[in-house]
Length: 386
Image: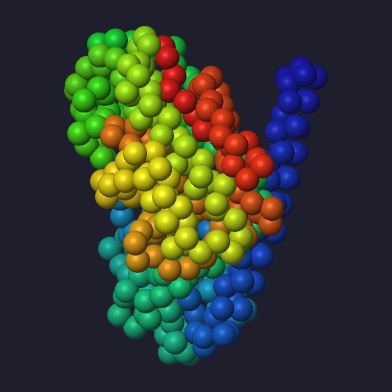
């Protein structure tokens, strides 16, 4: 190994240590938040097993095996004085080494893969009330209440969120040179998926629509249909538990005026929603903001075809904002707005600060439309001409 290689290795080790320290501090802050909640509600222990809550408490750790299931490789039992991680014996080595070490101090207990995690912690059930994120016998189900502890996002989480959004935008940029007439939607999906995977990103949701499918279907999973002129690609992309939603659209050659106008209308509605997402904003008011924008732009009933978006963070959406949604916007929350207009969509993810919303991600080769709202310029991705 030469001096340059040693220097690079030392730098990587230093970065790893710094990242571990940041994650450890984040996990400690969340543990304190969880224990305060437990004390307030009288729970002796809280059981966490779903991937999003495990990722939240461990500052990005992964306990999942099958991403479609909440039956994961590790369950965390949190009390006021310790954390017990219970794992199937065939999962313990990886999860301890790659997800917990230097991040969260745990008592480790294992069971055979044919066994039952809770059999190893019976003393917790005997000592007091156990609550958790899954409805098991003897467990008070409080998944929704536990997810409320995701917010406010910590500074380190927001930094990880920014980095994820930049990488998602960069993956979309990598897609541009590969776009060609006649390619299938599966091929578009594959190109983008590969770019995500190289960055350690999992596309939890990936939708591709070309030409007439974009207007016909609201959630178009990729098919073998071949691209003629127009494509819309939407993703909900996850890394470290956090989820970023983005949609980008392109056209081979100049689009007709009607399509361009519809895309601009969707972008204008999204810009208004971003501008209105401020601390204290009431969710019924945000929904009305979208309805007013739709009506003013000549699409009064279009909102009925598809959700306008909603709260996000460690899930694709915690909920969608609709006619009956109550609540308000708080500092440190994340929102994904995705208004659609007749086969077009404008979608990005934002985080709320004291002075308003920060849209995450980058421009990365896509044209931008600018909207002046409330004395501030809001940019939304335009329709890329390839």
